[in-house]
Length: 255
Image (cartoon, rainbow, N blue to C red; front, side, top):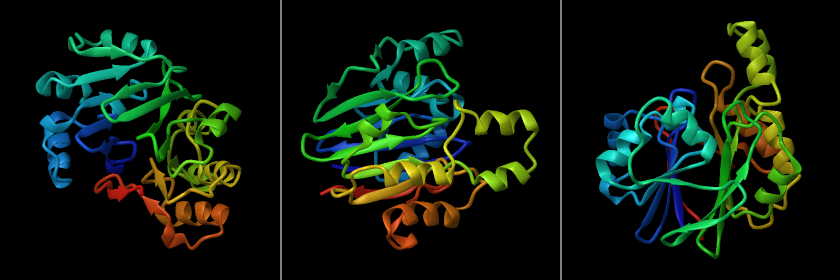
């Protein structure tokens, strides 16, 4: 099983997870032309995507999902809450499918386990994705960490963890007070130290890859995120990968 980021940050998010001929896109937060361009950079034809699976309805995660699924005929999966928000903005494609936040399901050779997260969206979820042998845990857009989130992410073979901001940089930065309060709130985004605390609490004996994701371009930098996660693992900062907004992250194989 392998995974890659097509881009991660406040201006758009999309991930690919592949096992054999099964290729799942988690979130599609770029316009149709841009997502097609970013797929090409990874050597992927858009027709090869088996399904698009959304975490929530915010535009940086769902901007291109409807047009992509409509154009290329793949299934589009989302929660009931996410569907209610997207349907209010326009007609959803016929291949729209509903998922439940407490129920696993399979897409081809991949099993997806959704789990709820605290974020200011309608029924937001994140995913643990498995091929039956290895597990990729994905966490972004969460204001705080719950016991259930820890349980879901424990003993994964690879982890993608939100490191949205450094608290001091955010507080001293130029964002308006209301936006700062939203990001720092219990339904906002995880900061570097919160992600590090989560990582330190997990069983990491199987861990092959750790990726810092959804970094704020103004309120964080890759060195701070790497240092925080490396401190939790007791490893060198260069062993922590970062999914960037412009370039994403190259393919990573989970063996």
